[in-house]
Length: 261
Image (spheres, rainbow, N blue to C red):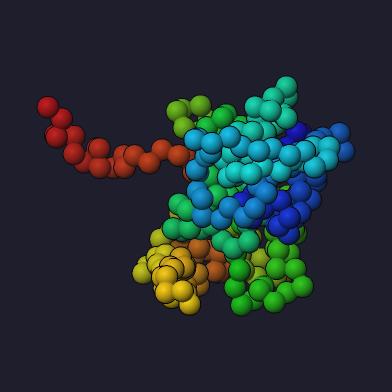
């Protein structure tokens, strides 16, 4: 396989090295792994792109590039510059430091790269490592992703029969906040919503009198509805969520059909 790897934590993030190992296993001895990742951390940028300014791309070594832009920029730059003569068979984004389950999914640059890959017609998987008390202090907090990442991706690819109805599928994988040996299995799960958990701001007054606001997240250990992504993660399972970029509330359209005139 020919695999493109990117992330939103930056070119030097430990999770990128984890994903490079997963990609190397998947690609096989005759395959290729290409790294095109942001120069700096891009957490929380979602699916944004550098639409109004140029994007600097720097070749670091063979098949390894650094982009001064977002994860979606990395996908665009890879497909239309260094990989333009032979597109990847698969795009992997991550492994993110922290979960991209429930409401976090909407803000995630890791997910943004997978969205762009799907829009460009390339099978794409986003991978994230949930953090919690049971894995935060491990020698390698990513060990669940290291141990189980390649197998999960193989299972997804075996089931991914192609999807050409408008917005293509992409896949969101979250590894639970436990040691690798304590992972209970894999669960196909819908995106959840942690009740009462939202981003907010914390104020800080600088010595010069100016006021700054820090964005802060909510409690990541609050479970959403039973069987949804973060819920199964907190129960020790890897969540796999098939997604599309279509934001239409189809149930509302069906329920309000008599609104048409």
